[in-house]
Figure (cartoon, helix red, strand yellow):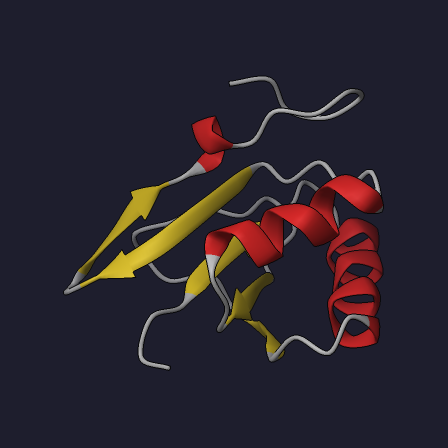
Length: 92
């Protein structure tokens, strides 16, 4: 799959927690430094090679609250955070 998403959290703890849940769900995930175009307060981000709906399902069922979810499109990143809407999480 050539499409991938970058997921940013507010803390290293949340990145590591999310990484564990994505791996447990069998998703292809990697901890990376955030791309220059994106900002992550904790200095790391997740790169996930999966469809948005699959990512959103893992985020929802584990009550993960990312600061940003971005789809890589060409040389830019398109925010998808507004697609998320779940109780106790991000409302968009």
